[in-house]
Each structure stands twice: as C-alpha cells, then as structure tokens.
Image (cartoon, rainbow, N blue to C red; front, side):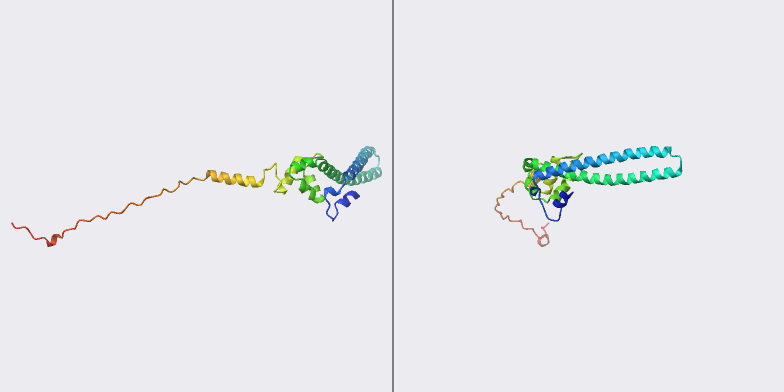
Length: 209
C-alpha cells in the first residue's frame, strides 16, 4: 500500500498531481491483492469446516482439544484477513473514485465544481468519495451536489445563491401591502364668522305692567 502512503502523506497533493496511468496500475494491483485475500479466506473457511467434522468424530478429549486449537488459529487468521480485505476494499474504492473523477472531468466542470476539485487536497477528495460511493460505484451526481454545497459560488443543480436571495426579496415585495400615494390637499381659506353677542339678562329692565 505504498501508493497511498505517498499520496495521503502530510504534503498536500491534488488529483492533478497523480497520473492516470499510475492510478490504473494501482487499481490492477489492488484487485489482484483483493482476489488473493478472498481466495485465502475461502481456503481457511473450508479448512475450518473439515476440522469441525474431525472434532465431531474425535474419540478423546485430547484430540478434541488439539483440533479446537487449530480452529482457534484459523479464526484468528480469518479476522486478520477480514481487516486486510476491508482496508483493501476501501483503497480500491478510492482509486476507482479518483479514476471516475478524472475521466468525467467535463461533467464536474459543467456542474461548476471543476475548479474546486482541481484545487482540493487528495485526502479531502478521498473522504467525499467514501461518502458518495454505493456498492463500489461512485455516485457522480451525489458527489457534485455535495461539492456544490461546499462551494457556495458553484451551485448549478442547487440554483445560484444570489438568484435565490433575489427571488426571496421579490416574493417579500410581492406580498407586501401597497401603500396608496398621499393625496395633495388644498388649503381652504378660513373665513372669520362673527359670533352673536350674548345678552346679560341680569342687566335688562323689567317691562312696565
């Protein structure tokens, strides 16, 4: 696994730094390693099955104990093989993802995430590949959508952020009540009116009888 020791080291490397031929060679080597591990795992399972039959037919406790130790050793080997198979599968998935991104560069460019991928650290890309691979196949649309959310300026599938903000503003303006323009009022001249004088009844003289 020296390939991943070199590309996933401390120094930042981008996908453009890794030639496609190198990725293809690594893919072939990993596929062969995976097949080898699977064959060894199958052999050990068959050996355990045979030993279980021998254990069932053993005539003494000593024989059973000896066979049980062999089965125990086989299961330890199987556990180690399972760990190696898991790691190998993960690395193979990453290499296939790198190759898929390289071979579909035009697609990611149309989705607006080409520059983001070009400048992204290979370690970070590997994490996104792991999250968007289903049954060994990279889901390119899902990867593009995740990267679009990461890069707010390139969201062709999601819609451009500025347009969404503009739409929200227009919706707000369309829903706001329209205020009628204030009518210009003409001032009418104030006409002074004379108020009738009140008579003081106390000062009135009584009429003669």
